[in-house]
Amino acid sequence: MRFVSVVLCFLCLSVSRAWGAAPPETQAVAAAVNAFALDAYRQLAKDEKGNIFFSPYSISSALATVWAGAAGSTAEEMAAALHFPKPEALHTGMKYLMERFNATPEKTGVMEIVNWLGLGKKAGALEIANRLWLDKGEKPLPEYAALVEANYGADVGSVDFQQYPEEARKEINRWVERKTRDKIKELLMEGNVTPNTRLVLTNAIYFNSAWRHPFEKSDTEEKPFRIGKGRQINVPLMKQTQKELLYGELFYGEKLDRWEPDLQWVKIPYATPDFSLLVLLPKENETFTQMELLEKKLSPEAIAAWVARMGKREVKLWLPKFRDERRYSLKGLLQKLGIKLAFTQEADFSRMAEAIDDPLYVDSVVHQSFIELDEEGTKVAVGMMWGSAVASAPVYFRADHPFIYCLMDDATGTILFLGRMVEPASL
Image 1 (spheres, rainbow, N blue to C red):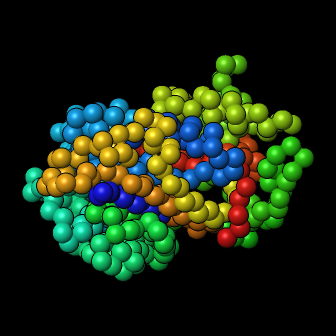
Image 2 (image 1 turned 30 degrees about the vertical axis):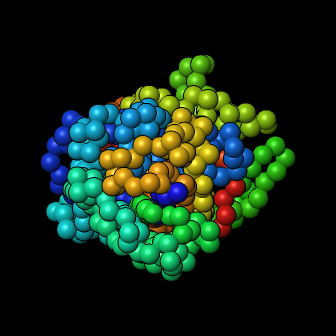
Image 3 (image 1 turned 180 degrees about the horizontal axis):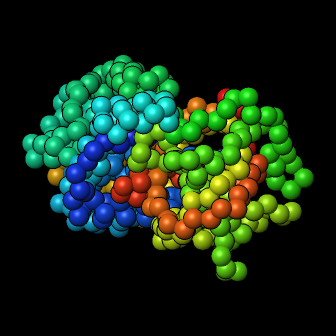
C-alpha cells in the first residue's frame, strides 16, 4: 500500500505591493476558497464547542496540488467538495495568489510612504512555501512535477520513508519549523509517517503584521470576557478610539433588518494597505443564541453583503489580546464534505506518479495553525470590500464576548484565515 499525507500549517499574514490586475481566473479561485471556508467552518462548528482557527486558503491550495494528480471519480469528488473551477483556471488563479502573497511589502513605494508617515510599523512578512517529499523509490510523472512547481512553487525533496520513516518525519518538521519562524515545531507527530508513506505534501504560511494604528499598551486593562451564560473570565482588553484625520476612522456595519442576526462588524486595517481584520460580533444577550444565529447565516454571499454595507465611522473599539493554536486532522472533515475515494485504495492518482502494484491514496491531512494578537499587531490577517457611507456619531464595538474573525485579502476578497474566539488565552 502506498499513501499520501498532506500536512498544512500557517501563521501570520498581511502584505501588499503595487500589483497588476488579477487575471479573471483569480475571482473563480477566490470564490472557491471562500465557499470551502464556510463549508469547513460550519462542519468544525458542529464538532468543536470552543475556539476555531484555520486557513482555508492553505488547505485549498495544498489540496489543489493533490487534485492536480487525481483522475476520474477521485478528481470529480475533490473538485465538487472544494468548489474548484476547471483545472486551467484553478492553477492560473492559485499561481497569481501565491505570487501576490509572496511579494515583499517593505520594498513597495506605498509601504515606504506609510512607514515614513509613522502610520504603522513595517508590515512584516508573508511567506508561502510548498514542498513535495517523495520516497526515494517513487517516480513522479514529469508533467505533474512541472505543473505543481510552475503554479504552486512546490519543489521536490527525496527522503527514505521505507527504511527511515522517523528520520524523514524529523526532516519534514525541521522544514516546517524553519518556514514558520519556529512557531510550529511538531507538525508531524510520531506515527504520522510510516514505511508505507510514499509522498508527503507540506504547505507552510508565515505572516506577521503591525496594525496601521497600534493600540496603546497603557490603555489595555484586565476586563471580564463573557464566555457563556453566567460564565466569564478576565482577559487583557485593548482599547482605542479611531477619530483622527486621514486613516483614523474604521469601516463599520451593523444589522439593518429583523431577518439578520443582532450583529455588529468592523474592519481593522493592518500597516500594509491590502489586508485587514474583519470582526463579526453578535450582540450579547442572556442566552448567547446570537452566535448560533450568526453561524447559520454565514456564507460567502452574506460576508460580501455585510462588507459592502460598511461605512467610515468613529469607533470606540475594545478587542481582547489572545493567543491560540489549533491542530486538526482533516480526514474526517473532508470525508463529511464529500471527499471519500481519495482516502481509499480505490483512489485514482494516476496523473501524479508512475503506476506500480500498490495503489496510491491519501492517508491523512493534518492542519496546524497559530495566532497571536496584541497591541502592536497580529500574526494572521484579513480584508474585504469597502463601503462608502460616512457618519459622524461614534459607535461602540466592545468585543468582550464570543466573536468570529475573518482574515481576507482586500484586493481579491480571498479568505486566508477564519476563526471563532470563544475563550481567549492570554499571551
